[in-house]
Image 1 (cartoon, one colour):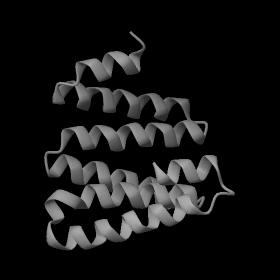
Image 2 (cartoon, rainbow, N blue to C red):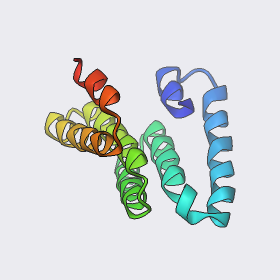
Image 3 (cartoon, rainbow, N blue to C red):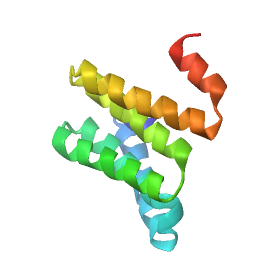
Image 4 (cartoon, rainbow, N blue to C red):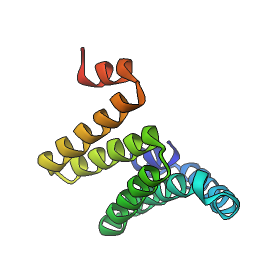
Length: 124
């Protein structure tokens, strides 16, 4: 949320600082439990890189986060990474990949059993 808000309010200095503190916390936690925190850290790093305009690096971190979440069986967090990757492609003007990743996110959310969320996203 901090990095998304930082992109929306680039003149407000507190949001990148809040996001940076979150990254440092997750770095510490990931050292103790990679299984639980690796994908979350990668996703935060992707959002930070996107905020800084480092698009290629951000894209790689989104993919790494999805792969980590999948490997560690966090299907809902794999869906979140895919949803944020979809937003990334929307911001880059790539409607095809935006839809591809949104569809992937919805499939993850359905697998997780979040049918209400899927319905909400689809606008039903």
